[in-house]
Image 1 (cartoon, helix red, strand yellow):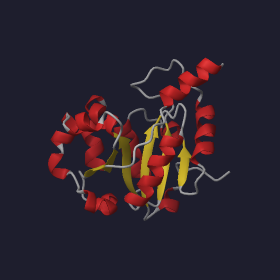
Image 2 (cartoon, rainbow, N blue to C red):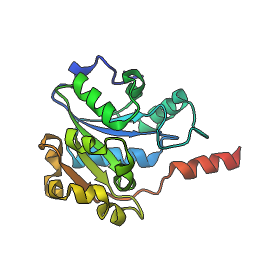
Image 3 (cartoon, rainbow, N blue to C red):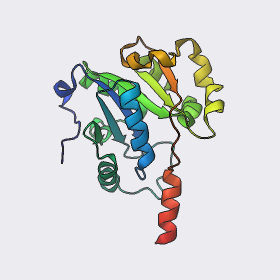
Image 4 (cartoon, one colour):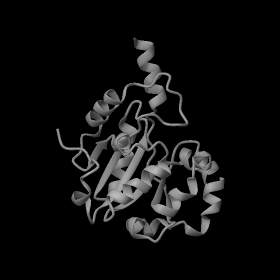
Length: 205
């Protein structure tokens, strides 16, 4: 099994552009992999990290698989040399994304990070703690999601940073842009849903 990014692996990622896909991954599924492969190519990334959260502050712990279970399944689903699964947030001791990114930048000072998220999260990110710090600290790439894209692009976050939106033609260099910088990518949609997978598993148990 390949080594996951950890607190002291900063030198290994010096000079690289790394996309971070954070979440519960409860469970990881083909949609996560689909987005990651698209991000690697469209954004010119060197790696994508699946940052598996110990517990999302905005989600209930009910029905949440253990962290080791979620990590193991994520590694099995990722199955790609440039997609790396990590629980580094646990070691950092951070709970909120803004704090996590600040710590990552301190420990990986020569790595260019891009925060990857779906349009559903762009719509709700104003509810996240210190959410504007996320846009101020790293580039942000937003991916189309069924039914969410239009409302997300007319929402508070998109409107606040409308002048910092990067055109599709410029996304290849998004990681190197002066922040805030964000882009909305019209990626091919994927039907996979963690909620649907959990429901199907529960029905079959």
